[in-house]
Amino acid sequence: MKKTLAILLALALLIGLAPAVVAEGDWITLRVETYDREITGLDVTNCWQLHYAQEHFGDPNHIKLEFVSFARWTEGDLLTNALAGGTAPDICLTYNGGLVQQAIDDEGIWQLDDLLNEYGENLKAFLGDELLGYGQSDHDGDGVKEQWYIPARRISRANVGNFIREDWLKALNMEKPTTVEEFTEYLRQAKEANLGGETTVPFSFGIYAPDPLYNVRRFTDAFVDFSQVTEEDWFAYARNPEMLPGAKEGFRWLNTLYHEGLIPDTFALTDNDKANDTALIMGYNGFFSQQPDQPWRTDKNYQIELEKNVEGGHWVTVNCFYNESLGKYLHDIYAPAGLSIIIPLTTDEKTAVAAVQYMDWMAIPENMFAMQNGLEGINFEGFTENGIPYGVKSADAVPDENKMHAGDICFISNGLCYGDDEKNAAALALPFAGYEDDVVASYVDALTDAWTQVSFTVSVQAETDYGATVKSKQGEFLAAVVSCDADQFDTVFDSGIQEILQSGAAQMIEEFRATYQEGNYRGVFPGNL
Image 1: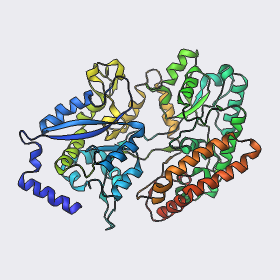
Image 2 (image 1 turned 90 degrees about the vertical axis):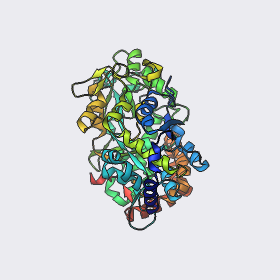
Image 3 (image 1 turned 120 degrees about the horizontal axis):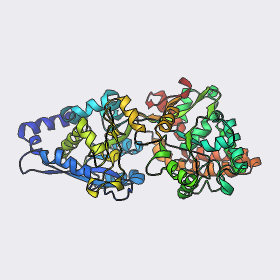
Image 4 (image 1 turned 90 degrees about the horizontal axis):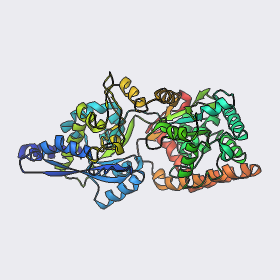
């Protein structure tokens, strides 16, 4: 395909097809996917960024930009259906690596080497060769990797944030816990003292249905015996952390907390998010675990809302999940590649050229700044001494014609980018006026003893075939082992593991092991930290 595309591009230049993108009177439409996060008052198909990009990129090149809205949390299913039905946008975005790999296997997307080389100079410079490598694979088996998708650049790779009530620690005359044992004692004392009133449930805990063990492993990994885990095992059990040596004791610990009333008895309900949010802001809970800046985010600002309801209520970061076999506080972090950007083959050649040109335009610093930040005096108040916008306004605080969303529309950068790591780090804390030190401390903790999440550079058929079923079984397993009678724990745990294996996990583990042995993997084994 690469040679064919090169010939087509050369012919286009000879007969005038490529210049037709900007020829007088000859306009094309470029349809671009963006995410709808249901932000009040923001229409992502008619936002300020669209009008800015149209004026500064589209109009000069005779390209009509059209933003196509996909709901963020169901984007994988929506995009799968759109690709299958031939209705996908010309630029598609997804966090679903399996979907992208399947599109590569099916040869349903453009191979991008020639397009990038011809039209993507700024884009390639912004991403760099190492990051671009995440979007490359040797699909035809000739020993040469081709560029199949554009990996967005992830500015902050931190993922795990653990938060504890500083005011509760003071009330109990306790220091921040540094081990699981100390943390458990904190939970017990907080419960006994009814620090959240009669509804005190110290540990905010629930099941994340799309991937039930994704968050739980940040607790159970503290119990894993890494003296019995090889690097190969780590990658083989990448989707089954419940089967690692020692993890069973982590689930037993959760079972103990449940029976002591330290986690909610409704933890297994799939529609429990609003109840959990309410408990956090009303002060019923004394610990939760989400993203490193979650307590201060504008969408769910647990800190400010807590202050309204509890005088002196204060969330602070904590590192207490210490793994004794490694002597480390393990935190998983994202790979440097963020979401994946693809161009479906249903997009014609002229429009595929325009798609790469659009991303290349977006990579120019002044354009990226505008698309991520908007206008001074409207979307933000002004600049710090080192050129970072401050006083950033929420969508509901700006006129309709200036409403925007930085992350999903300037999609080549997952996170605000100001040119260097120092500025980017300072910018992470700046939006949280009055809480900058708390945010910085949280990111420091989140990057302590960090291991990069596991991924594979080829399609693993067993994961495609059984991944969804295995996750469903893991959800049932988690609900059962946490809530079962203590004297039944071993039986419930062991039978649950067998059910997960029989649902397809055995095949996944076998194929992941083989994939690791072939060298087709990325990520970090904590034992190598």
